[in-house]
Image (cartoon, rainbow, N blue to C red; front, side, top):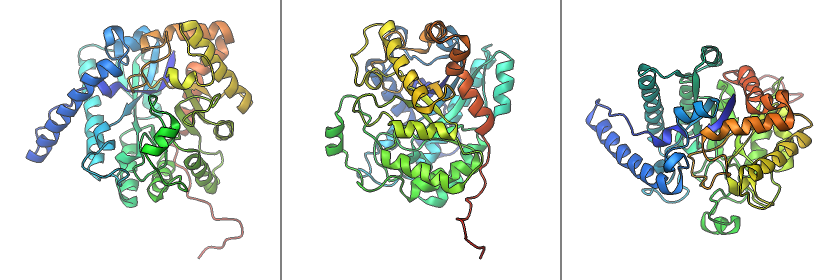
Length: 399
């Protein structure tokens, strides 16, 4: 069984109608138009399922022996808010858009279950274990982009608490563009890192802003896993330093849900220093299925065999840098605008072949750890584990 740390199940859903107030109905109509635009664009530049259909569906999960996905909630028209100047602080209304999308996923899965599908949404480690024991496919809510959380520190703390109560497993704090939360690495495959830096400027000396600090602190306090994917090196350092200040024993596991190793020059890919620090926290490094990032520094793959050989380079590198096989995982980012995906791994239905290849190369025990065991271990020990308040520095006295 594969556990995918990052897959865009909500991307192909249309919003459910909300018959509450006039204002909410207007929001629903606007969201529905935006969703139709996203679905239309996705058929050309995103989806790589059969017939250019979505690659993250329950049917493809079953075909590929994918038992669990972190279902990434993401509202692109809030990140690319054309009503605001570039780099503007987030709008507080983005959070309601996020909750609306979460509820759309809940409604869709409820409808699928009513129609006989063996599927569930897990809101806790206990629900996850019960669903897997019952032979169900499992979705777990995750969030991509700290801009969803609000524009004020107190608002962010409250909203992270709400997400924890709604069963969100992790939040990717940074994303594609600077929105006053955390500086990010270039992540537009059609644009070089240098050109990205010229077009989308960010504060040069900033990693986590005050809003980013508030988000990371609240996530630590409420047991939502901190995802450093998309962060700049400076923001990653700030995040680790912030968690080190808490002096938690055991440490809070840090995850990178959809990453690659920096075997070439792309800054999106994680440095050896970052990989080692993730390992020291007991965290996870989820390998992305994007050809652009996995092949950086190597020839582009032309077949599944080429793709698998490249993935093995990253797997072996992670094991070498961390000194362990405990931190390798997979986070495909399928349906998240990574087209072209690695040949032979274009949709979740292809994941059974990947698991068979892992077993043939590494043996059943290691392959099982890479596919799901490492991720299930971290979920069982860290998800919803509230961290203690930050420890006072040595020699400090209480006021």
